[in-house]
Amino acid sequence: MVVSKVWQLVRRPQGLPTLDDFKCVQQQVPPCSDGDVIVEAVSLSVDPYMRSRARNLPLGSTMFGSQVARVIESKNNDYKVGSLMVHYQGWRTHTHITTQDIANPANMIKPLPDMEGLPASLGLGVIGMPGNTAYFGLLELCEPKAGDTVLVNGAAGAVGSAVVQIAKMKGCKVIAFAGSDEKVAWVKELGADHVFNYKTTDVGKALTETAPQKINCYFDNVGGQFTAEALPHMATFGRIAVCGAISTYNEEKKGVVMTSPLSEGTMIMCQLRVEGFLVTRWANRWMEGLNQMKRWVLDGKVKYKETITNGFENMPKAFIGLFHGDNIGKAVVMP
Image 1 (cartoon, one colour):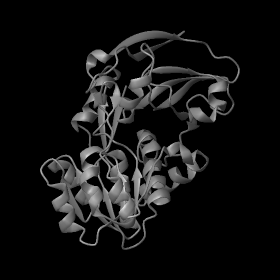
Image 2 (image 1 turned 120 degrees about the horizontal axis):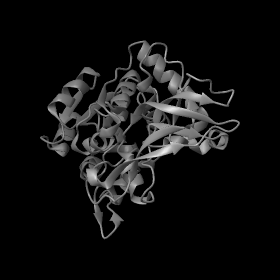
Image 3 (image 1 turned 30 degrees about the vertical axis):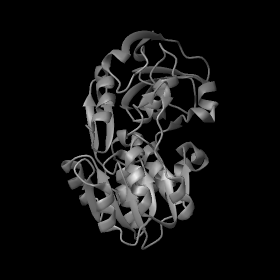
Image 4 (image 1 turned 180 degrees about the vertical axis):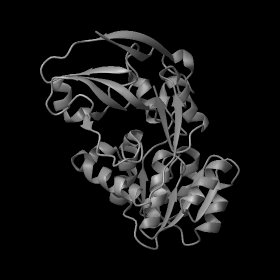
């Protein structure tokens, strides 16, 4: 029998998550039936969206998340022993995946693409869900055109850093914000035209100076007060892709999730198109995005960074660190 270490959510986070919200237990992994596989984690993802999942996940459940995993036992001809896959079965070292799990499109269980010598962990980052989030969210919703001004916040994160580089490839002027001087320096390396530390900069003043012709596309990873300050700088017929709202994830009042202080008047007068999205909208084009991101990485057109935490026992610590700005690029745990 295979034994798995599993991180469970045992207490509902109030504000910032704490270590006491999680508990590591051991579970026996059921044996394979026909069509099933057993996999072992190679690298695991921690992402800000998991904080929202923790609001509704039943207590005692495995914390939700994705991982790159290696097949160690298989009764499924599509997944040979030794092959790699990406799955979303959560924070666990070993996982039994049934043929029904694999067949359900909602589970997003897919073979890891041929990485052509790149690290397998990129299947959780720039050649994974965050890469597709940047690719489809920017190109399909913001529809950037050469000469457009694009605003990106959270620009040193896994998604934001990819958005910056794709926008530059499309011939756009990019204004970016990140959370430390170190992050600002890296985003400058990615080619952004103007980069600011939002913690030490007046957002409105910076946008007045760097976007006198206003902002055509805004890729929002942060929400909250940042968006309130950015909205008046949008151009007429501007497009806003609402990807995330990390600034609000830990804010609750009487059990109600706090929302961004958007100005409906500005949205009406500037005739803005504001659209929230989940990247799974493009599930039927998933490999298109991954293959394009991989090609850009291999060609040197898209750079990436990973913040790696070693040790499965440090999953909660790595997750909590996201909300303190500890990561540059994709945050990954190596078990």
